[in-house]
Length: 196
Length: 120
Image 1 (cartoon, chains in turn yellow, cyan):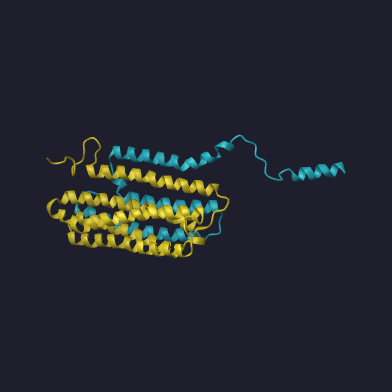
Image 2: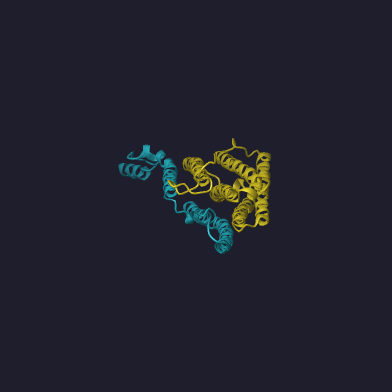
């Protein structure tokens, strides 16, 4: 038996199953990161002293990582648009870039973490560093999740394009929505942690 | 995103403009952090730029502007309301100070000195 509404819109919500599921998941993610941003505000307002991000963090490195993540969001939406145009070869190229760019992001983040550890700037050092490590590490886990999913749709999962193209388009759209959300979180994390 | 190949190509042209705007927004965010302004104004500037960038991503890359599902709009609206509540929770930390008279250390120092001066 075929599962209904994998491609067609549901009459009750006006969305297909994939979109319905991913948006509900993203709503829960908003609350997850919202809780941490709320914690940040609470800790910062209650602190006697709060360091400028630049005292501990490297702004040029953070800026480069921001540009990398935005670029990967652009390649993701271009990969989806390529599928809509029926250009599978272009899709593969853009999707590969979407997988490789966040790998570069993680390498740079890894270097940043290495510097922090070598200077003993661990979470136990200060409240600022505790919230920095928590928020960036959770975001990093989301990046790893995105790389795995996008990597699957670039590699073995892309075979579906030849048998069920509409279903494959939906899956890539859902992966894209998740990926743009991860980018969106970083758009707020960067100024909050590095610049303020 | 839906529609003909022509519409998709129009979308692609928009994506390129949005990509450029996001790049400029990032540079402006960094430059604004070097402005010699108070912390409150600095935070306001940074958050206004970040919110603008985020709304561009949500509207164009996530195609939220094209969604017509009322169900989705209500769900995301509720999420936004609860998110706002979450952001305001830290204000509760001040609730136990409401209505309590607050005296700063040495706030009456001048008054004491004047009173002592009059006695002598």
